Amino acid sequence: MNPDGEKLPLSLVLVAHNEAANLPRCLERAAPLAREIVVVVNDCTDDTVAIARRYGAIVHEHAWRGHRDQKNLALGYATQPWILCLDADEELSPELADALRAFIAQDDPAFAGAYFARRVWFLGRWIKHGDWYPDYSLRLLRRGRGQWTGSREHDKMKLDGPAAKLAGDLNHYSFRDLDHQLAKIPYFAAIYRQRLLDEHTRWSAPGVIFRSGWRFFRAYFLRRGFLDGFPGFYIAAFQAFSTFYRHCTLYEHLIQNGKPAPTKKS
Image 1: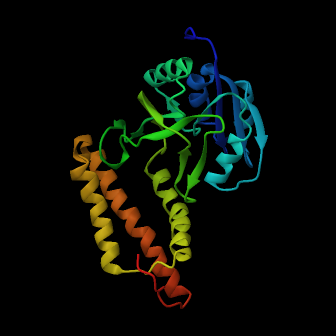
Image 2 (image 1 turned 180 degrees about the vertical axis):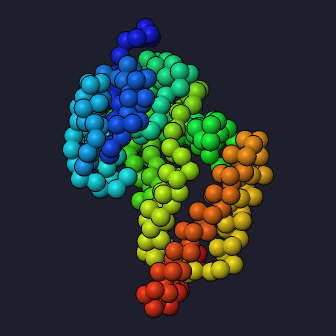
Image 3 (image 1 turned 60 degrees about the vertical axis):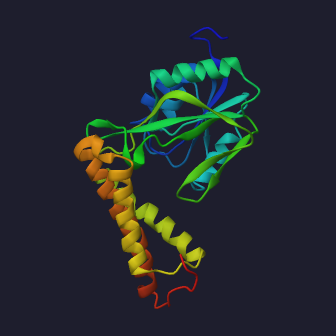
C-alpha cells in the first residue's frame, strides 16, 4: 500500500466556469492525492485558470456543451489508471480522502469504481437527512470503465462493473446563500421543461399538485428532514416549490405558444 503523502495513480478531473471562490478549497485536499489534475474551463473571466495552474493542473479551454457532455470531454483527457471526478464546489472530507487513498492503493480488480455519500453545507449546518443526504455519488472509476449519462439537468456516472462504497463524505458547498439557490431554479426549470416537451408530456394540474406535495412529505417525514431543524423544513418546502415551478413553466409555455397540451400522459 502506498504510504501517506505519496501521489496515487489518479487523475483528478474537473470542469469549471468562474470558480475562483471555490476552486482552492476543492484542490487543497484533493490535489495531494493525484498524479494528474485536469481542469476543463469555459469562458472564465476570473482567476479560475491561474488558480488551477497554481495547483499543477493541465487546463483545457472548451465551449460549454452542457453538464454531461462537458464532463465526458474532461474524462477523455485523463491518462492515469484511476479517475476522480469532482465539481469545483465540492471538497473531500478527511475521512473520504483517507478512504480513497486506501482503496486505490489496494487496487482490488473486483471493482471498477467507488461511490460515497455527499453532504451539503446549508444555512449554517451540515444537512444529514431529507432529500439531500446521503445523496450517494459515483465519482471514482477506472479509466475506460465509465462515462457520464443521464439527462441534461441531472447527469450521472454509468459504470462498467461493480462499485465499492467508501466511508466519509464529499462536502458540497452548493449555495452561497438563499438568493443564489433561488437563482438556479429558472435555469434548471428551462432544461426540464424542454425534456417534457421532447417527451410530449401532458400537463395536469392535479398531477402537479400531488407531485409537489409528495416531494415535501417524502423529504420532511419519510426521509426525516425534520431532524435537521428549520433548515430541514426549508429544504422540503423548497423541493416542493421547485417541483411545482418546473411543471408550471410547461403550462406557461403551452399557453403562450397557443399549443394544445401534448397527448402523451406523464
